[in-house]
Image 1 (cartoon, rainbow, N blue to C red):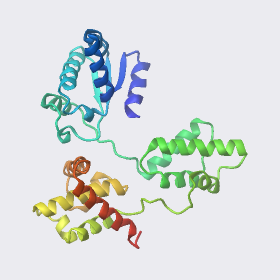
Image 2: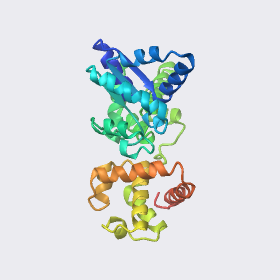
Image 3: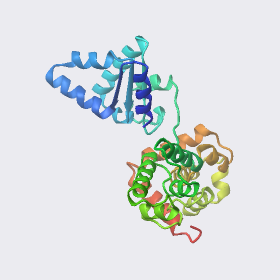
Image 4: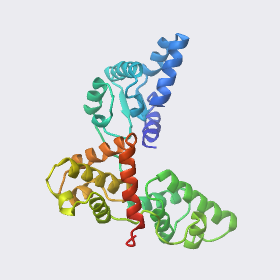
Length: 290
């Protein structure tokens, strides 16, 4: 995980570091209040050089936690320390987040961490296998990277299984061995749809044309369909945000990211939207082109 890697690097530089999730921070705060040990709680968190907090979106709407974190944030920064937070959406898209925290977050460096592309996944496998003293054949790395497209931990887990199987069974690292470990054929994984197919399926479902999605028109129906297309393109293809923007008439990175975040947030709460997205997904993967 990126935050943990940052933490290890800081600890190597002899900085005092705490890594915590927003949920764990909240739970610790509740226990400290009940035990009347808030002074110790504050000393623990406000005395560090670097505070790393994951899943920051969990904090939104929890007034006491937000208040405590706001003062913790300020105390660390005022002492010359650093605060790094990670979440599943941008600050402006976190519904219910305290405005003071939102402005603090937006005043810092914001990085959009995207899923690694195929070439990057292959490079990760090469690096990880080399670290274990093994050279992974390109065709094996390519097969793994093609099947596991979004989760680096899952990718590393598959590599570990293949290396272990090859060692214990004294077999060479071959595509056949990789297929056996994956439990799949050499056929590509479920994620075989492309950006054009996503746009076409979304437009068809909403009884619109591709030109409508790409156009500058901003009727309620078109904007909603466009945002859904962005969300599905990000979730179901390996297209980057700039590539999605280019396909939708040259829209910029921030516009595409906003559209994605909007649907990603709403789909968790809106049953109708979730059904709509699921229907388009089924249309995509039942298509003879896939």
